[in-house]
Length: 256
Image (cartoon, rainbow, N blue to C red; front, side):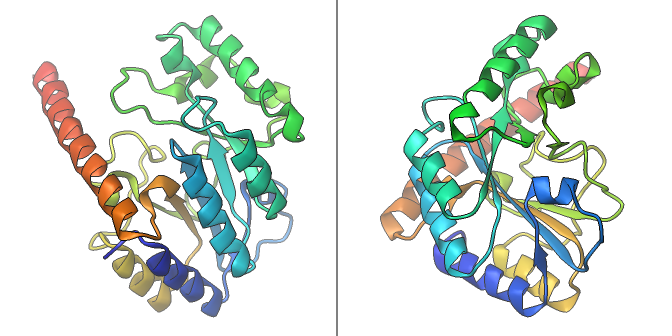
């Protein structure tokens, strides 16, 4: 079984044994001396925030710090979960989708983004943001930055736009596979992972052979401690992947 806490713990053990330096996104933005190898653990809290807490607790057991990006939707934005993640020493950021929410209206999207940033003020504010892909929306939320600048709000880093992608490899569990075959939008432009890495076991073996600077992006709802919870998300993932396949075929047909 993949995408369990036991498998994630083995991933952390491998990273620790290979001498990785764990950076949050805001720490990377302030990095002066580059240490090698480096890993940025990123968690997109799309839904089921209680599972994010469990993953954050597991990381804390290993002395690992990471960054959790929360949406400002009821399915993600849990004050209790955010407070607990911060108390464990992790960073919290904003998983924004304001341009999609504004249906492509730039000004409205910017105002929604500002409102979202303000939601985090009671937790001490945020320094990092990451676009929520919204695969069934026609708008890419990163396009908001063609007209506006998030840095005017004190934000240091956008997880897709501000990393040196000549330095980092990018891995995401979107679609329940590290191959990103079912990933429509959750990746930096032009960046794809090495071939032949589908399962977490593949990823562990790859990093164990050649420790390179990496960003590892997960969705904590996908990672479970129980068989019942694992089955629940497996069914959801399969349904979403089928919908993505239909969407991809429809978009390709429109381009012909």
